Image (cartoon, rainbow, N blue to C red; front, side, top):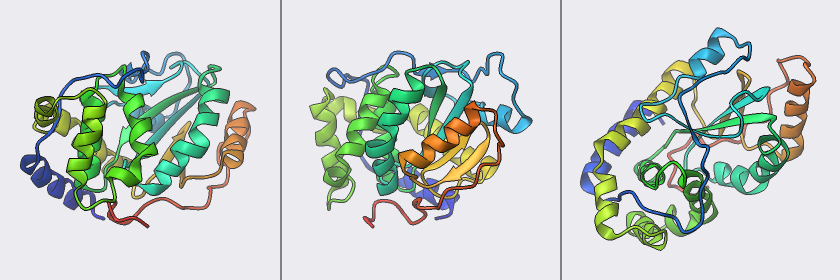
Length: 248
């Protein structure tokens, strides 16, 4: 779907729905998640420097920013392939690469529909220490809120389980600063880096599309660590390119 059209639809949706505010998500959360796009002492290309420019509210990150590998993931919270990656591949990437200091991971908002926009806003409103906890839960429970007849009500109920009052939910959905951040990140991803489907990854600047299995992801990361050819073969594309919110 054309990204400008997506954003236009999202604007209407945000103005029409009630939303959410700053609250807690039980015990979910990470502390080292906000960064200003610093690349430390790593040698990077001009393209990678452009990738490192964060959105208005900063980047949501995990790991050591001076790690030898930097991964940017553009995702939509209503993308079934993104949920698959979150469930099956990302935990192993986190355990074997992020937690061991080999990978610096950055998640970027790229919603394909209004409900995904609202879900990203909810995650940001949860606060930087709880952002990834919200993302994990939203992906894990995607069928219960993204593909139902009343997705905003379902999302509101999920937010309440995470500690949001109805008033805070409404305040978040009306927060223009948060909305502008999501909009800016998504627009820049499409216009500057050619993101057209989700998930799309940039691994030390190399673009890879689709929710590839861990074995394939691991092979790419090992090649990067060994100093091998940066132009590793692109993985088969399995990313979302249709309006998310419609279950495939």
